[in-house]
Length: 161
Image (cartoon, rainbow, N blue to C red; front, side):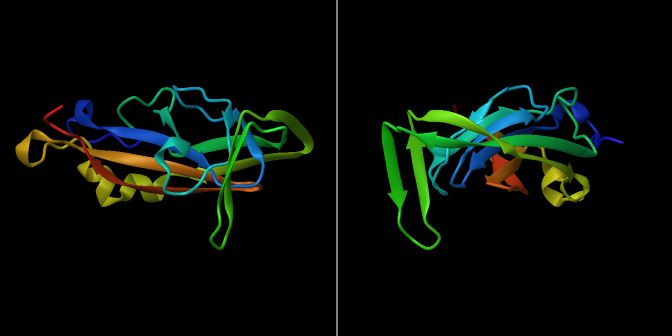
């Protein structure tokens, strides 16, 4: 059963994704309304490395019970740009690369959204706050080669834009 808030037309959320692994990520299945097929390796904390996926298909004002994600890793070569963030662990940002899909590196994971749906952040999503801003739920998928994890939190919209 999908989460629907009272006054559900006000429920606001956005799905984001980032790749902090060594390989490129080819998204084979992730039911969002913005269809990115490739996620370049990026550096945590750098906003340019985060893809906005918009919302889940069929859930404009609610959340599904779970999401199935399937991805394939790709070797990146002949990159035009490589930036290294040299702390432990080391991250790299690579762009303008030749992508070679790795046939033996296809992964699938079903992610349960129950914790997200029951969170205070979800309960506040879409509610008007002081000065006319609204609370929005942010759902963040982080790919690290063979695994994908989920984090979430609330954000505030800017009423003065």
